[in-house]
Amino acid sequence: MEVVITGDIVNSRSVRSEKWLITLKAVLADFGRETRDWEVYRGDSFQLVVAAERALDAVFHIKSAIKETAPLDVRMALGLGSVTYRSPRVLESNGSAFVYSGECFDQLKKHNLRIKSDFPELDDTLNLMFSLVDFIMGNWKPVTTEIVRHKLKYPDLTQRKLAQMMGRKSQASISEGLKRGGYEEIRSLIEYFKIQITKR
Image (cartoon, rainbow, N blue to C red; front, side):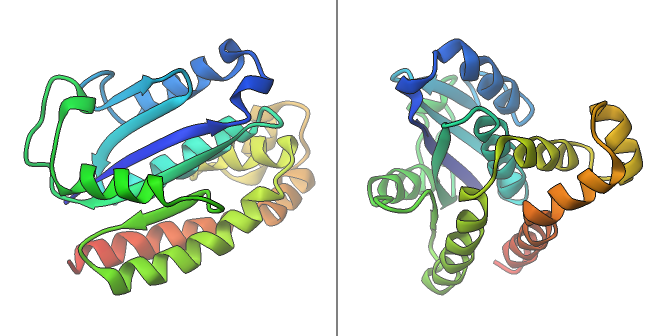
């Protein structure tokens, strides 16, 4: 199974695109090849196809990278399913993962993160979890976002090492930032998702 992530940048017109587009493309490039695995289109929309077990890693990397620039945010719809046709362009590929992602994106409305798959009970559970974690992420300040983003990228680094890497941060500020940002809860959700995927 694979996951197709369809998303767009919230408040994109309030910030010059060069401030976030390079960042978005850099994160997407960590999860695949441009055009074949991901594309940015219509100015502020994007689509990424990724192995199911890497999907939430991608989601939270994208989220933290974009939210570092206030007042930006990102909406994402996940389609969990099959990819039956892989085109050289991801926007021309097909399969249930693409269909679910598109349908889910059209139904986002007040939500910033949702999933649709062949497993309605799993969808209900995950979407409830997504609502809770999105509430946490909605309160991220740029400083908290930066700390969470670095910890997501370098999960094995100690808080002391992370503080040194980020320069102006102390170990205590890293610890506080991770708590405020719900980092442990996010990691738990990522691991839960991976476990559930392996059962399908």
